[in-house]
Structure formats: structure tokens, C-alpha cells
Length: 157
Image (cartoon, rainbow, N blue to C red; front, top):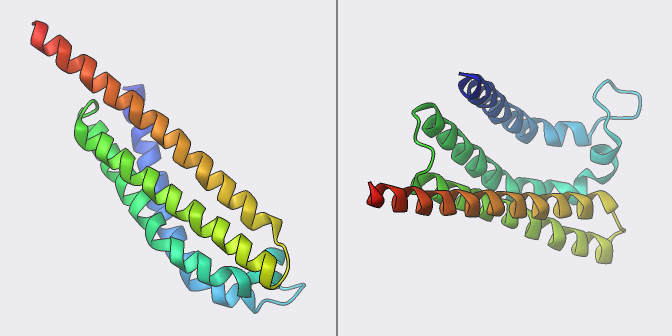
């Protein structure tokens, strides 16, 4: 029962993330024009947005793809489909989305550092995305091993 509550709560958060990502796509150019003292003034976006807008829009599809995969995994969990290869495939897709975002981040950082000036936040985001790819990969490997064990046990019975 507790697992279902957790899955339901996570499902709500994922759905909120769909909306927040859509809003960020719409608001990014507007926030770039905000002046210091405005209610929606974010230093990083206002000062460096012109360097970050292209990489941001490049990774948005990967962000949506990862959210969709998480959404599907949570639906499977709610239907008690846990140790299933479909979940492993979805985790694999999430790994690739994170790796793609990380590569875009590293390339963006290199271009920004060489062309304009260094923005350390970009490299930190890229490192975070790479770390998430590793975490998801470990979870995927655990899931795959659990499926193998389950299949072996099913054959024994």
C-alpha cells in the first residue's frame, strides 16, 4: 500500500514536471529580457541566457522523452508490472536521454568557454546529467538481474 502511495505521488510530480518543462520553454526567452529588480529576474538566465538558450532547447525533447519513460514505468508499477523487460528498456532510454543532455552540456560549456567566457554552471549541470545517467544505468542493471533471477525461479517451479 505504501509503495502505491509513493508511486502515485511520484506520478503527480512527473505530471507537474511536464507542465514546468513546457512553461520553461515558453518563459525562457521572456526571462532573458528581465531586468535586475524585476520579480522574475534570474541572474543566470538574464546574464547568460543568450549562451544557454540553444543548448536548453536542444535537450528539451530528451527531457520530455525521459519524463514519458518515467511515466510509463510508474504506470507499470501501479499495475504490478515491475520485473519486466519493458521497464529495463524504459530505463535504458532514460539513460540515453541523460547522456544526450550531458553531452550537449559538455559541448555547450566548451563552446561557451572558448567563444565567450566560462560559465561554470553549465559544466556542473552536465556533470549532474552524467551522474544521473550512471544512476539510472545501475538501476537498470539491477532490474535486469532481478528479471533473470525471477525467470530462473519460474523455471524451477
